Length: 396
Image (spheres, one colour):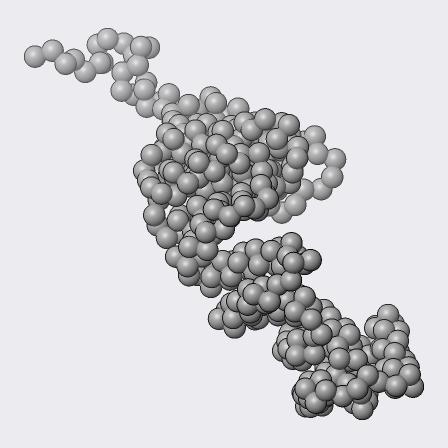
């Protein structure tokens, strides 16, 4: 953990801000050269990994008798240094001072957006929202040549306000902003992001009926975007919570059967949500005794990945489902697959995989024992090979 001197930083930042307020003239060539020199030395220290020395050079730079505007670049560099080393309080101090020294609204807006993100990361949600609203206030001073840039910043600030409310757990306010954003003229990806997050807020607000409607509407219009796999997971979870198991199963299977061309656009994301949705819904069906639907999803899951880490646990769950459905032969086939596949492995198994193989072998033994026991019991109760004279008659 790198330590940064606390008190001197606050004093130098305040001094820098005071300089610009006092309206000092531009620095002389010699003073500017000194500022540039300390900045260069700080950069070289950072490159060598000597962050404490870099901070020392920045502090000397800020102590130079020069206008604060000449020091803004150093403050931003200091903020980078502190943020990368997780000294977020000092990063905030540097950025707040840099904001006061910003020569234009354009630079101010960028600094405010960055400040909002750091405040949000520290859990200071209301302060973060305040900084994002300040970005919107900057837009009131807009000049025609930069209108597009301010429009972009305004939209970003609105998104960040919505995300901050979401992270803070205020889903009602988050939904309000995401809904408003969804009505603006945004890029297709931004509109998809806003509408998906709105549907997600409705789900978290336990407004499942509207969440279902929003999710279906989203998939109809934006089913080809990067938010589609998570939205399909959201739809399946919503249907399950609405006690509509058949539709929930179909939603998960739709996610599994998505066209290869769509999944290839972002294979990692699709694979993650396919596996998450399938596992969660299938396990839930299993725990609630709905083994037929559980096994339908497990069978689809088994096709997603052939690695033992993924496949063996899924096949084992299939075996358990077959047992519960009174299909011992199919269950034995599942456990035998694990045993056979484990023999083909050339590399050592993990402890988890070794445990799966042992449990499958134990279940196989249990099935054999149960079959033998039921055979003996059948003979005792009057099976076809028992002589008629010792059978218990049911006649009056």
